[in-house]
Image (cartoon, rainbow, N blue to C red; front, side, top):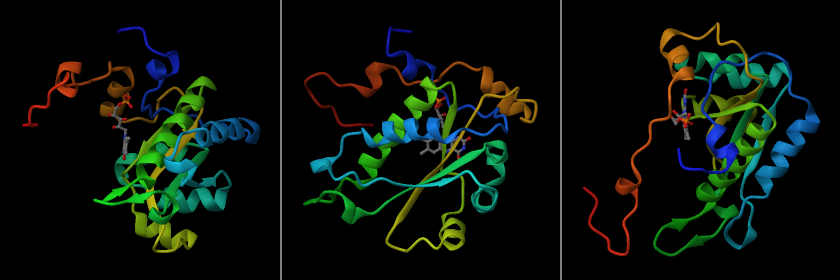
Length: 187
Ligand SMILES: Cc1cc2nc3c(=O)[nH]c(=O)nc-3n(C[C@H](O)[C@H](O)[C@H](O)COP(=O)(O)O)c2cc1C
């Protein structure tokens, strides 16, 4: 692979977690990194609900889809939210809250990688359940849940996920995602 920043290279959506807790100082660094992300007019629209205690973890785990069984082992689940009004809302439908929150999640994941932890975002959960369990108001968007934790041996993973832990990254070639100087309509 071309030489790129080490943490970008090392970060993967891994699933083999250990139950060992992540200390609050480490979480502090991870979330400080998240808040270093750029945002439109420095609006910082990201809002995180950190679950690292049993009652909150149980609520967040309950909302996960069956396919995300592996995330129930993680000692920290983060509900990532935002609101459109917390960020730039420009003409022609350009609302930047989710874009900027996504950038903060990337910074969070890279710092977690640097700390030797896994941080894996998920869309596979029931937002209505999260909303109900934590009394999250309707205007707030619940975007993703991130599982944060220490690498484990992966013994609890099904065959497909065990295989995926070992597999190489699949990426579209640069020629497919970059157009130099002229735009040809996407097919
Ligand atoms: C918005 C988003 C939602 C995702 N949802 C899930 C999910 O519900 N379950 C899962 O196992 N992985 C999920 N992933 C992980 C992706 O499948 C993974 O990032 C992708 O296959 C690329 O692999 P890599 O992150 O190891 O490079 C999600 C990733 C993102 C960014």
